Image 1 (tube, helix red, strand yellow):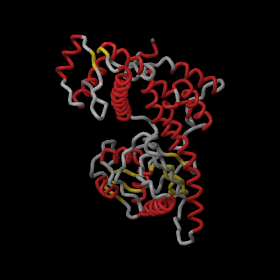
Image 2: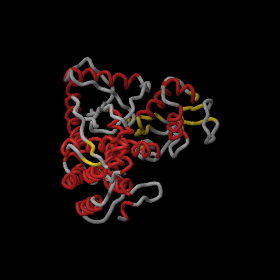
Image 3: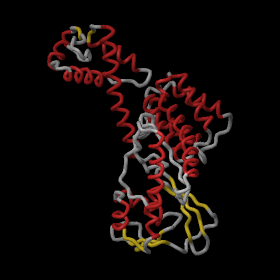
Image 4: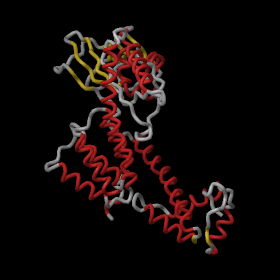
Length: 381
């Protein structure tokens, strides 16, 4: 089917997910017509995709950014599309997406309870508003836990929320992920004060300038513990973009460790609140590659699970029939490559202590493959 042909370096599943992201986020593409009718057409096109799992993974990452960055235009529309996908592919296909929406609702209640806890403790004075979203690891995309050095003001918020959360539950451990965090800083410029909506990493950089007038790139890296490659990207958004909050010396696009940055007190803008480029809002090429790698790895596990299910049910099968049966089972999510199925069978045999060369001999002679009778019951002979 033509919808399963790649367009350039992008798959149709990726493009369809990106289209959903564009119409679901605030400030995205506005399409004429009832949104429910559009969602029905999306699901109809989705039903023809051979790589439904690829769509699900891209959609999950884009949904995560919409939810965590408050860029979702409508919670009702988000739930409506997920419900339509659930009806088409079953509850297991949308379980993670539903879990993400549930986490957001639970976090709102958590946040209200945290605010009450702060108010009831007169000794705690945060000096700022703090909002924390608690995520369930299994539902959300994997984000790296960084070792960034937070400003003292933010460390106080982290410590107090941890104290509050541990007083509510002793069975869960918090891991702080600042990648998709946002801050609103009050910038005191000569012309007028301006509120800056920035990422947590950008805030870590700017708040250093409360301590001294200028820093080199290397100084900022040592103070924030941000990787140099990422740091340079964030410095570029602060000094070489539309909003020049920092002044870079020398004023060239090339960035080196000895560049000197100072706070630009003369900066002004007609708006009293501006949104800086957060970098994380767009899906980078590295993220796309990582998503495809994740899907490929998940497919290996799905193939192996299908092989085990089939062999436990059928007891004995020829190689050709096994491949056909596994392909039929997995066709609802993706179109498996027969070579991949063969490799996963060999992998299961080798892990069960079987002999790969024996498998080749049996496959060629058309003999049957049967489950081994070991205590685990998951290998093959």
